[in-house]
Each structure stands twice: as structure tokens, then as C-alpha cells.
Image (tube, rainbow, N blue to C red):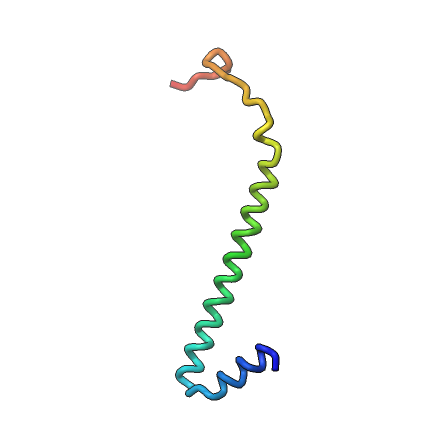
Length: 71
């Protein structure tokens, strides 16, 4: 028997109030999985955007490079 069928049968044996708790827990797990997936894609996106930047030379600037100074 597959896991989804085992879950379905087990839930059917629970009282309605506990079935509602199971549904709430399932919604929580789905939201958690979605959040983790977004975080994974965000981390990947940032790493791709920054790829190779550690090899770039950072130019040194000083006050003589400023074109306009606001006071």
C-alpha cells in the first residue's frame, strides 16, 4: 500500500476535530516547503549574480575622484 493511501485510511479513522488538526498541519508543511523552495531559489539567484565578482579588482577611489561635493 502506498504512503498516500496509508495516510488517507489513517485520517478516516480519526474524529473530525483531529482531522481538522491534520489538515492544519498539512497546510503548515506546504507553506514551509514553499518558503524553503523560495529561499533556495533566492540563494541560488544571488550566488549566480555574484559569480565571479570575487575575482574582480576593486578600484580605489579618493576625494579627488568626486565631481560634485554636497555640503
